[in-house]
Image (tube, rainbow, N blue to C red; front, top):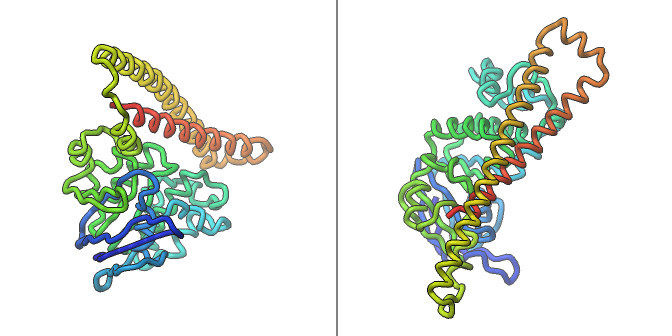
Length: 321
């Protein structure tokens, strides 16, 4: 992929202008930067979804697979999990659809569920499975870990680590990006600055510990402090540090409780799934009108708890120093 004098505006707002870059075959690149700097817009330009000024060309026989933040909502809600993958599987892969789905945590009767009853995380996993089924040689992944729990993120990351094509990822998740990419493009003030190395090297060079700090970096640098006496400034720093430590401790306690709750809910759901595989227990469950309602309630509670866990993690990133 090569861009020259690339420009993009929405009305009078200029997202970026005069951008030049080249992405070579098999490179793994992370797009990072503050919200609104044009990361997702750039992905759409590469995917050919939006118009632009300048030139942007892809190499010969480049086949692009694009995962958007709303990708999971574009699947047919009335198809089952199995049908969603089986309909696009070809050749030998069709014989191993169930094994493929199993690697994305769809086991047993999960494959017979309709897309419309899946949780947000399950839909995201299925959409990613569907994307990786096709032999794309350029993957564009825009916030692929949204709605995914820890286990699902690990499954996705392991799958992407085996991918031998070119990949561009937009993400704010440091743990997910670590070791996954070999170059970082930082979007800032309408331009792109490349950094060689993975996300850890980039953060070390920028002297920050979390990608979320990019959101506040500029604001912090312009705060006047010449009028603050040295001793008052030191006391304020100590108080701020103490406050952050207390906040981090409270958040860590909340995260531990949330992880325990998630583990408990996952066990309950798995126990229900196991009962469905037993003919005798299955018949008993079918006679219980409230059984599936309780099952769906457990799934919704789990999804809400996972969202809570993600929010807590984001809060920790925002206050970490």
